[in-house]
Image (cartoon, rainbow, N blue to C red; front, side, top):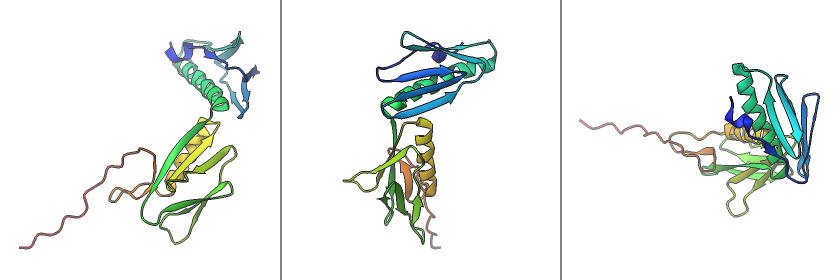
Length: 183
């Protein structure tokens, strides 16, 4: 039995949650998200509380029970508060600029790299520290995926630590070549 799946989800004021033919739709001020629920799972709304129930006792049912509850809870949080991930650029000459909705990177390549914002994602660049990028959106999955794609443009390298990393990420550095000893 999933401990997470048993927990009810409270619907905050201003959030409209509907369930129709296995499609859960959450709508609020920041946007709308929807999720197609697996047929082994049922979602019910009673008195401003959402409960997720499983239809069997198989291993798949237990896994889907907790997963579905977490996905619906993330949708409710996303349309009310939103999600964000922070990225940091480190390296001499590495910089980023906001061009409209897109990001324009200088990452040590012979050409600038332009990253187009997916639908539903906004970028912010810290005015004080020009090397901090904030990825904002209502979908936790899309925010995380977009941040991972930006990081993959120039992942941190292990010798000097240059590249794009998550804010607070620790990159283990390797020792360089040891100088040859004279005989």
